[in-house]
Length: 113
Length: 110
Image (cartoon, rainbow over all chains, first blue to last red):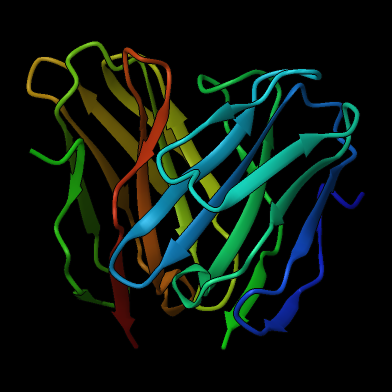
C-alpha cells in the first residue's frame, strides 16, 4: 500500500538545468497537488489538479509547469532551474479537492547551485 | 493579515502534560479544518480533521473548533516524547483553497 510516491527523493541541479518531479498515487483520488516547503514559509501551493484533465495555478506557480498525465500521475517540471527554487517539494492527493484530507508523499529535496 | 496563524513557538511541555496548540484564521467562510504532524525531515501526516463547531476526539487528540471566534485548537493529552514534532494547521477557505499555517514546534520533555 504505497499511497503517494514521489521520485526522485533527492536531486542536485545546476542553474538553468531542467528536470521533472514525478508523483503517483494508488488511492484512486481525484485531486492532486504540488507544494513547496521552505524554512519559515510553511507549505505553499504551486499547482493543483482538481480532477483528471484539469490543472490550475496555486500561490507560487512562476517557474513551474505541471502535467496531469492520468488519474494516478501528476508531474512538476522546472524548465530552467534557479537557486530560489531550492526547496523541499511535496506531492499530495485527496478524494476530492480541498474539503477532504490530503495525503502527502515523502517529498523531494531539491538543491539548485 | 495572514490567513492562517499559529504561534511560532516552540512549545515545551513535560511528559504526561496536556499540550494545547492554537490556530486562528481570517476567512469567516472557512468550512474545513485540518491538523497535520510533521516530524523533522519527514512529510506532513494527517492527525485530525473537523468540520463542525465543538470538539472531536480521537484517542489522545482532541480538535476544538469555534467558528464564531475563528479559531481551531488541538489538544494532546498525556503528551509523550514521540509527540515532539511540528504541527501544521490547515484551513479550507471560502475560495475553496487549502491554506497552511507555518506550524508550531512541540517539544515534550521526558
